[in-house]
Length: 268
Image 1 (cartoon, rainbow, N blue to C red):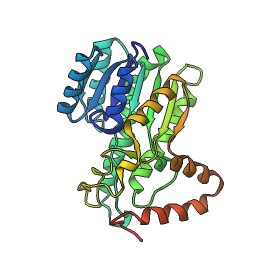
Image 2: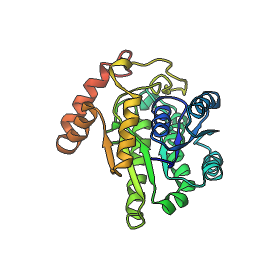
Image 3: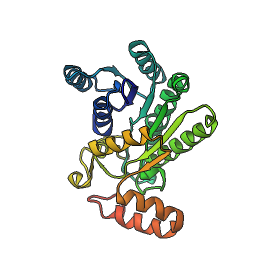
């Protein structure tokens, strides 16, 4: 990663913030994109004062023009793009029958279209350097999770897009990684959208028992270096993907019962 130019979206918290630090500590030059510019600027000062190179760009990935500005900032500041980490994302927690379609559209705008926009503008530079596109997905991209219809839909769409992109460019040297962290300690569940579009505000799970974001970031960085096509993390995540292949009917029952046990679950 020495002197590689790495763009990370959703870089103000959770896995995105951990990825920014992880790649920086490995010698990369970092371009952080997220809506919370204050947090990112604080991290940039921290990294720059420690001898690393980083810059922050206020970015709402659901806006095509802002994704273009993010990529242009990387090219203007550092001269290109070697790695694009599409991490920005939001979740949801509500039954589809009660959920406004506006909520599902918002999830698609951020999780799917944000990945498409950033990848579109970064692609010429990535092809030039035979670089890497990373999609930070979820086990929800392998199996539909109850009360997460919009989230699963957006991650399934991300998978299809990235798999097609990989095949299209298999002779051009482009590396595409789909990373599925499983349940990770982060604020994604706290900001998950409810049926009316309001934020959940708290997590229904014991965050401290989950894989830390820093460990997820280290796995992603290593997978990029090894140019792996996929990376599924945690025992729970690997078990889910395996069951999806060999016992999908049984998996549906397991997933339903498991998710129904969450505090204040919208279904029983």
